[in-house]
Length: 94
Image (cartoon, rainbow, N blue to C red; front, side, top):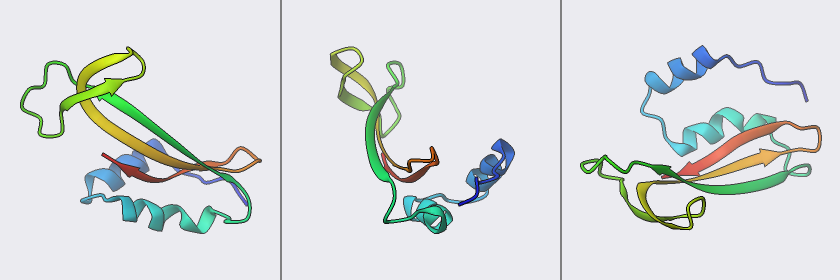
């Protein structure tokens, strides 16, 4: 499997030019993923937004970093990683 050549500008153009959804991410990376080799890694994080009162997704949530409840946007990522060090995001949920 060859490394993926992808520039920061190409990613920005893709995200700015579309109404991006999680299924579109899978469509882009699925050809590089082997179901027989690799691991799925799930990670949840809180994007803190303590001063953003009018953002719809902003709510009180537990922060493992601060060990307390904080205001922010919850994000869960799913990444595929193989033993050669190739890692690809394959899904996310806000």
